Length: 386
Image 1 (cartoon, helix red, strand yellow):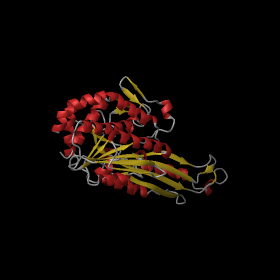
Image 2 (cartoon, rainbow, N blue to C red):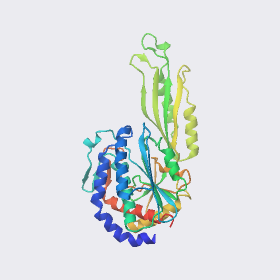
Image 3 (cartoon, one colour):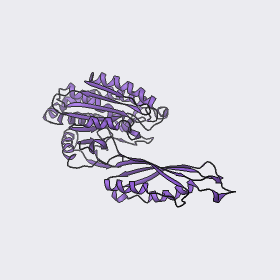
Image 4 (cartoon, rainbow, N blue to C red):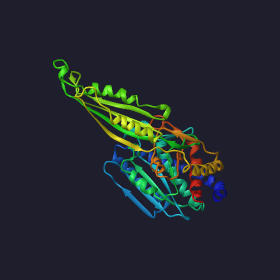
């Protein structure tokens, strides 16, 4: 940490002078709308990112683009280091916002608040991470080898990019996740995330002329939703939510099919197993109605254990030099950091600039937090494996 401490005054001045450039880069990425549901749009942003990262950091030792067709591309940049070891930086550039949102919520910087679709989750963090690497290099800080992974399917659960992320993490000293922070705190614990779809298949009939001849898939799924809700155990950190229900074809038709989409979160593996077993055991009281469960647990839980603690303590010491020691937060949302933490790799999550309103129309980043986050990331990179 000595080298970073000595370089900090000059680094702080350089980051401050470069602030407008950071905002310009962030604007460019935010205005390239990247809904996960539009691989073509995400692909255009990947084209921009490929050129921008190289312009910022130079040609990488190895640069790989993974195209999947149904999902946005994943970009992997590898840069050599000046000392042993390697650090992975994880950043996604897809968002939950549909095309056209930029017209309703244009990029803006007003009274210290930066707005725009996806600005907090997590384009501000991605831009900050690359700026941090550049500043650390320009000020002569010795860094380990770096692997930057930018994926375009995180908001879908990273179905295509997960194996690439896990491969990138093999042998790494640490992983830095550029998701937004909470104030000046990091996200040290995250829940496991499961995504399921419950389907019921009944027998259609005329609701007036032959009500007994049918077996309602809608009635069955309504019955099962109550059982799903009973799986909640909030005191144990487990939540089970039915968020979308569809079914039937008409008011006067006994429904032949219905679906319920379920979001599950848990902090403990035992709770994951309990919920999973219960969901797979669901049966309708009417034996004529078939029940099918699709989906699985996607992200394992991330815990603040002995593997994670030393890296957090080192980062907190660096943060104290930049602004103040770091706090710890446990959150319900998952991230790509869950994958690597489950494999025993030390993870720091929530290094991106803080704000509020992820996935909400008031999504924003606090402009005053940006420069310190760039300094914090640079300091951590310069100290890992020191």
